[in-house]
Amino acid sequence: MKTDAGAPAELRELRDEVKRGIDYRAFYLRYCPEARQNGARLQSLCPIPAHAHSGKGHPSLSIDLQQGLFNCFSRDEGGDAITFYELMHGVSYARAVRELARDLGLDGRKGRRPSLAARAAPDAAEVEGESFEPLDAEQTAAVCSRFLEICRAEEQLEGTAYLARRGIDAGTARRAGVTYFPRRAYRRVMRRMSGGFSVETLRRAGLFNRREHLTFYHHRLLFPFYVGGRPVYLQARTTAAGVEPRWHNMRGHVPALYNADALDKLPSGSVVYLVEGFTDTLTLLAHGFAGVGLVGAGGLKGEWLAPLGRFRVVAALDPDAAGRRAAARYRELFHARGLSLAAIELPSDINDLFRHHPAAALELELLTERALEEVDGGQGVD
Ligand SMILES: [Zn+2]
Image (tube, rainbow, N blue to C red; front, side, top):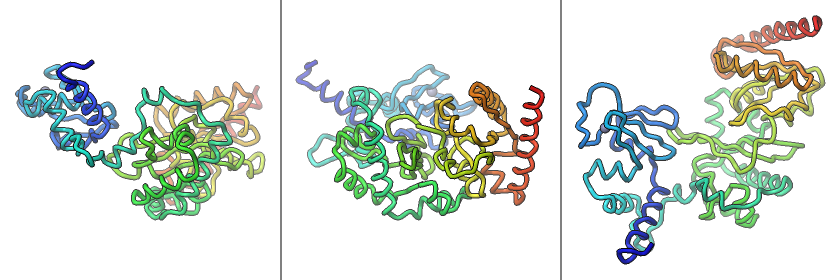
């Protein structure tokens, strides 16, 4: 559409750039400093002047940090960040776009570029849709191995400290292949990756975006998944407070239970715990227990259970309704494969237990023994 001498097209382009570059959390907090964060949402009293709220009562403004959308329930008005800016400043849409662009250093003058964080942002889903075949297992393993190797050459201190605060020692993290790189190494890591692979390969792996930047900018604590001794998938966590989403993954699917590959060395008949999350898995390993973790969305897959067949598996999930429901569901999945699953209920999640109770290991062993007896008793009756 070329109307008004091309101005709308230009404006649309600038609007898209604003939306790519904006940090929604920082933007909305500027107007709602008292907002409370709940997952990927902010709740706040609504500051929109035309709404003329009393400033008392319940927060009526809800903000979706992922989409950048706001909604005031009380006046039934919502929209995107640009609309919010319009309402807050009483300006036109075009002026809101231009002022926001200027704030972000995107005012179209030559030599002004979006921030590094904006250039590193993963491609939006619709852009990915345009896209490529996933890499085959061989190429994926090569990319993962090299990425970990390059990151491992960087200072690990901040990553190690982050894990230590959660009771996970450096030796355990190293054995599990957990790897970190500091933000100041971002460009170097990116350069070294692009030195080793074509941009197309790196984009197909989800490591690079269409701006040819490494997408692991906020998320630099890497948790590799190994199959047959080789890393074939990575999930990465931010170690900073307030970054949403907290996780960023390469492309592809979670290939197995986390840490399942390490079970190869374990004697048959050993006790293996099934837990949720990286932290609980690594906490168990740090205290000399064997564990595998269910991480990320999508749930437990039947085909992941085969390697567990020769062990005595004990579910140790969170002691709440969701944990109990999950344990019941997993037990059915195990049963469908002719396996049994014992379940224990701890007074708190595993990480809390080991951080706050000196006798945590003993308590875990006692509960485990009782749960395994129950399973064995149950089998006797069959
Ligand atoms: Zn309002």
